[in-house]
Image (cartoon, rainbow, N blue to C red; front, side, top):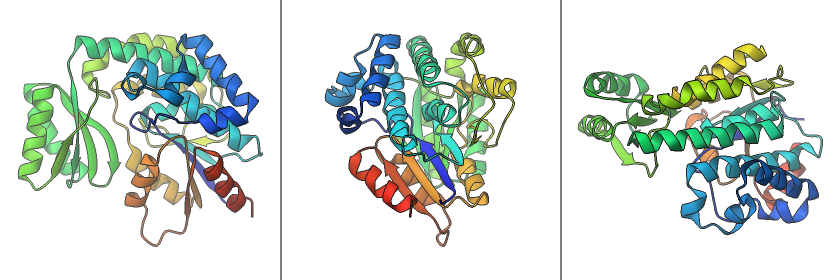
Length: 313
């Protein structure tokens, strides 16, 4: 079988109707949703299948909902005996990757993201924040602007998504100022519809409490390789992984570096495991033009059948 990486999406990939086909088809998917709803006391199936989108997108609802959907898609793949050689997840999606690589259980993955969502929501209410995507500058050039502007307030890089697509995060005035300077240098900036300044110092108040909570969860040595947002590298010691994940809330997501690492590993099949096609879109902007690979999405019966038929040839 082809050398395969499973990639798990995070906030921004949600869709009303996500996972409904898998829910109707598989008893174990329904049991997974029941488990998540018991932990969170949120009607995740209703929110995921019927919305409304505004309620689904609230971070306290979205984090467990999207993780449940990701894990349901993972179950459908795993039940056919297909495992990842490498796993990675974008921000929230990293908690699904932890499960894919055998580091935490499905139950603990849901517990972690539910707590994470609660704490992030709390800090966002305390500290108004903003985020913006900047397109057209390198990470070095944008970082220089950020360093200059952060002398007057909180701003930092949140996500390095592609070579020249970078998300900034922080206080609204500072984010606006970085975007303005970047525009003067020829970049394009787009304000993001978010309820908080994720991956910034503005949610630092959640870090210690979440770190303590992570410490109460059983982490195993990975059964397959995983690349982490904070380091864009592998880790195998459970204690080291706990430390890395404790820093994830306020650290930048090094997605571009993660994909380059997977290219170095000669991955032949990239599989976006979960709703939408956000990560597939980023992949197409990162991968070298002549790089030999296939890109799949697994989020409904049709996309799973295509993936299964091709991957098992």
